[in-house]
Amino acid sequence: MAVKKIVTYPAEILEAECEPVKVFDKKLGKLLNDMYDTMLEFDGVGLAAPQIGLARQIAIVDIDDDFGTIEMINPEILETNGEQTGPEGCLSFPGLYGEVTRPEYVKIKAQDRKGKYFTLEAEDFLARAILHEIDHLHGVLFTSKVTRYLNEEELEGLESE
Image 1 (cartoon, helix red, strand yellow):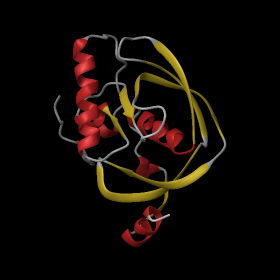
Image 2: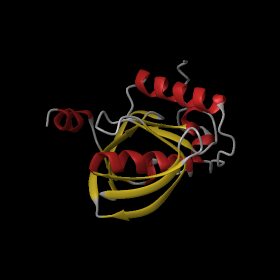
Image 3: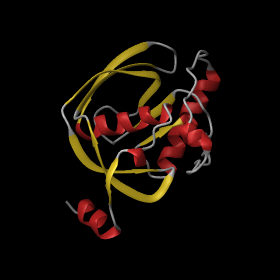
Image 4: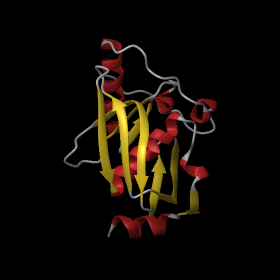
């Protein structure tokens, strides 16, 4: 396992459309393991391949809930519903947080590390995290969706709720 370097804005790869994954091999498994280690090291709840310098459709999410770690390869959004507004940050934008409105519910189809297709439904914070990471795979940054940036005092208030 290895912790990778996080690519930070304004690196061009963060705004690039990522290539679909076609080969599901041991190297992909190692990459996913490294992404998980990297996400934990930097205290994230998700990580997309472009954030470690790879323009590939690979993302992981782990919000410490019943789902455990969700590995999404070549994910597609099948359905969204509702609306939620809440704080978001991004490992590629250290120290920057803002309010973002996203769907309350999402249904996706993706592949696992072996190439097997699965569907997943998520709500609330998990839906937010999944949509944030899928955006990364299409070069869409959370800053393009921020309605209002949050200062440190506001963030501390949110953490104590």
